[in-house]
Image (cartoon, rainbow, N blue to C red):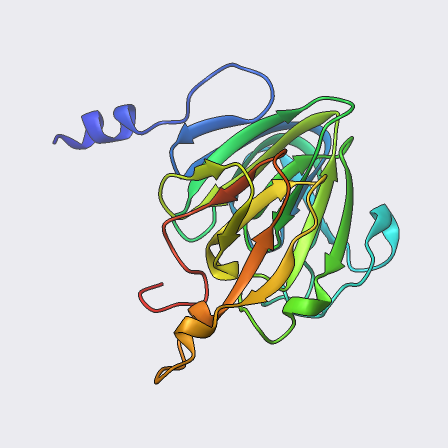
Length: 220
């Protein structure tokens, strides 16, 4: 490919409002004010931008476990300014969702990428999963209205409970669900596989989002 063709075919897309996927793994956020992003996810920006860590009770952040979500020790950053902000997370696919005023979702802290500042958020620790799963320790509860962006390794699968899931492969679930920890004894004989610990979602309403990848597993 000629250099000119390469630069033209991979240039940012002009126009549009709200969260825009430049490709499957890169999100463009036009900003004229503030937006919340996962710490460490910024890959580039244009215009004037400042970034502030949000590791206190501001924004309804509770139960925060240091370094549970990002190596910086601050799970969420506020980006403020005017321009375009480009965010990505380890080559994972970006999923953009629109939450209505009466809608909310619980997302694994490892899979939150960005959300509009109008979206209410609360960060909690799932105590029953502490020490049991690398990717299932901290969850971010997001309430609309507003746009949010989450990331998945590969294409997600959305399931209806009742269902058992691997905590390291569990991306998100509807907030009307309250997962509990289950132990499958069939995995305990002769092996120490992480599959012995599972998340159990009961009932017949709501949804659970899983991905074909274990955050804390091999091959990451």
